[in-house]
Length: 124
Image 1 (cartoon, rainbow, N blue to C red):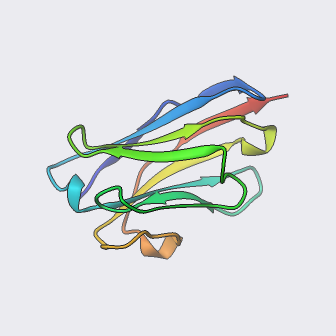
Image 2 (image 1 turned 180 degrees about the vertical axis):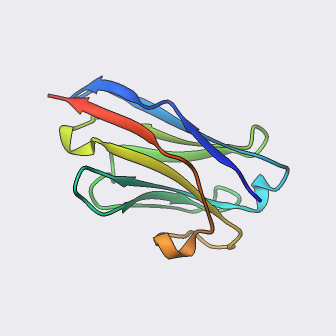
């Protein structure tokens, strides 16, 4: 019943920055744990970042820790992924995910709702 719509993807040069947004429908956003995953060409979907309902807890994948930052705005019903110091290996389709769990969720199976994905391409 929750609809997630990603935006902000595009082409960026290595070393640049990009901000992805994920807008959730309805009034249930504050009861959702949110996360970001990505899937590159010929690769499996991997965990990128996650944030708890209130935003008090976050978690990051090893490959993005220190470069990416996840945040949320419970008034705008939107979760963000700020990506800095982008590398060509960050090229992938980025997916937004949501679930009603009270904790930070870092696994694919832990999420019940998914967005359609947005393409991020980093050129060298």
